[in-house]
Length: 474
Image (cartoon, rainbow, N blue to C red; front, side):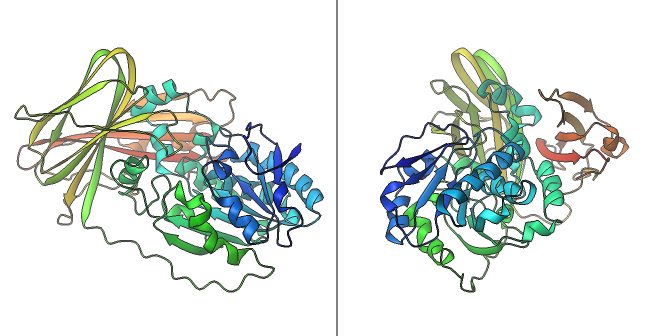
């Protein structure tokens, strides 16, 4: 089903519906099909976006499609495969496809797994999480459950973007010859705005893993056989705006793409170590969470993310000082749609026990995230980063460390994804993950201990592991 479009269009977001820019009829250049990302619709290209001015100006007719905003790449890939055949029939020539965020993965699935290759000239992906996003891992983790259940944001789209699941998708996809048959060009972003920006918290959270645009890491936006065109300070929102991106797209829309000579961005050297603590739950009246700050912490970023906007919050330091100046922003990462961040950053925080209090007359579901920033310390005195093997042991400090593993096993094949939960303090290497039914193990590791100076600390590490039907572990 498709419609012609005259200028602005209020998209209804019906999956499978596509439409063309009627004002650009008769354009000589390749038609361009734009594909939206997670929890979005074709509106993302049209409302508050000057993209069509640029497609017309450079002689291209734009087409837009709505896919399922909350479904995985398999369902969207299958739908898109059918629709690309229709769109090819309409234009009577191949199209260039531009995918924002998960839209880039949906396109690749249509090409590689659903036979849509003959209808596409080339693909351009704008900050697509080709290797998943740690924010998807977080959304399915132990401490986020109350909140993501309340937001109803645990869906097949977010599930499929967990990093463990995407490792499995990459291994199923990248080995195939068809994956390299159509050229891919990738873009990544490193901007997440200032403290009031709706992507600031996402960028801060992801900064432990590398540079990001507030929702997707630069390293995740790359494909090993794709050509990286450019990485610059776009955010996950601005990377799809006409004035920002089209100057770089236009050279990819010619009959033959000239050789792209662009030096890839180098990862910034880390001058700080960032670790995290998560807590979460539900309360009515007053909600209280306590946490410790140990020596060496130069800054803490406290973020209370909830399904409510109107609550009041206070952060109380060990000497009784009360902080109430929280910044409130709505989440724009795509992984916590409809949630509100209440954030505050404290430099040179006092040692000892801090307390976060929330006041609300209604029931409120929340997740509290505290990021601890330290200067890079001597080797051997650091927390294992999330990328390190789970089986590693934490003898970070002299005092014994208590480690609790909470493992959510979510099978991929059951329609309603019945989760089983296992909580253990045993070393995970003794756990036979491969014997579970095919699915994702979302693992939350809670660490408690005491530093050499006698100060308490608590941290959280989240990892995902995918086990396929043959018992292979990703």
